[in-house]
Image (cartoon, rainbow, N blue to C red; front, top):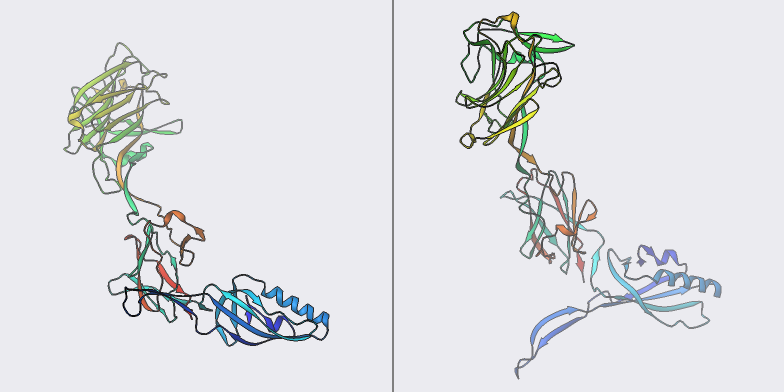
Length: 487
């Protein structure tokens, strides 16, 4: 026989197990109830009482010292609590017991026969190896495993779950109970919102993506001029080449349709259109017009910023803000090298947040509430550079350029991939004996759902089904394990 893997016959020279009793039929206690004066009693239940295994042995020594040393070694091996006890005639099963009693050995003998007892609080013996049952998809697509228990007692079940995809929920279901871990309502994705840049022209060359001679404007000026690219101090600027002709303002125009967002939606209720410009005079008599315009889905004017100079007797320029073709505000300033429209400061933008329009120019934000415009969508972006009447190219504002233009759509809906509770590749383990749940070797106390029941596998066959989050595809690889118990 062996104790926790140590065979006494191999470890204690002179020791031999003669015979063993108590391994066969266990004793059962019957609970009954007397019903009045009726004959006999009514059966209630039974339970197996602890098992006592008695081992009769022989120990031989050649000298008293040798005999005593061998007995000491025997005691040392037997002095273990809840030890695994295996007998040579049944090596595939084991009992769990603690040495409780032993015969008194006569003094002076070097060849003795005696006995000792193992007290087994659990009367069952267990299979040395576990049985594994792999889950597979049933006819309805649900993962299931059929557990076959050829033993005599109901035993705990352990489960191993290897995740082949992110997962938020594990359900283990049988006719005897249900185990649940995680959150059955956990989702893999949710709709969130972000800002997305749909146009991003960083140099004058990028403006070639726009269509020449077209555009949406607050006023329908002639668009018969042409653009040119000018490089100043290594930076490219989009400028006016041929100023065109007309009685009032006239010049060159470009338009682009704003691309659809990542979700395929066209038009933007909420947006920011931004431009880097340079509007600076060298002489008082210079004139010119620069416009950044946003058109709506109906092809009409939605909002625009104009920077123009028409005064030929004073160095005065004007920022004008338009919404729905109507002027909302104008700001006068001096367009010199220190102004808000100089090469290093010329940032302007038009921002719409539902009903709120915000313009940034001259270094200041200007806001307007337009409830009737809250659902209007931007669809086109137009840039315009022009001259007035017959002033001609020789009197054009000296530095009147676009350097960059961008369009950012705000509150774009997109699917956000939520990091789920059980990551792809993670291993979840259900210890049915300890009634504990582990993820990658770490006990996860909070994952077990209240009401879960750690059911046992009774003798015979039982079916267990496994459930996971709907988005978990491919499904986990799952096995169930039992260690059969015998009497």
